[in-house]
Image 1 (tube, one colour):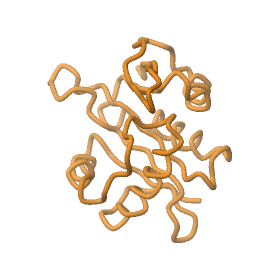
Image 2 (cartoon, rainbow, N blue to C red):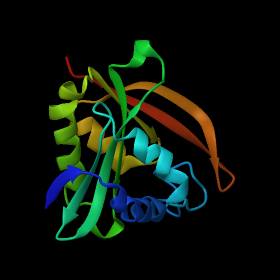
Image 3 (tube, rainbow, N blue to C red):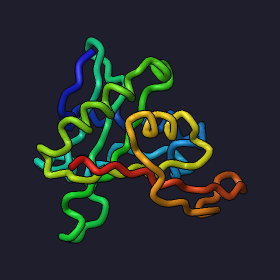
Length: 163
């Protein structure tokens, strides 16, 4: 298993993994699958020295990814990054998210990150447990902020100061 910076030709596999999460309805607010074309701009933003996109691969297959994203595009928030982690359904529960999150915490300061955030649906217990196990704390709770299949869902903001 290898973690590396994503390349543009990895985008179809990255989007495939993301789209596997859509019908599960616990990890994304997208209600329909997305296209590679719709994510080209996002991918290019993740090519900065401060906000990388990593993939995990076994052989030539990408099985997961982690992105650092700007929390807000305002200068005062430059040292804060929002993390997203997605693991292929065939590989969930095997510690891959832990390896990605560990590396993000270790390398975050080299990207200018002093604070890491994760926005997680309250019903996504596996992700909440993962981030909690690395010392992230609940910094915010937004009740009934999303509607998924007619059900109002809460959003938890988890945070960790690296410094």
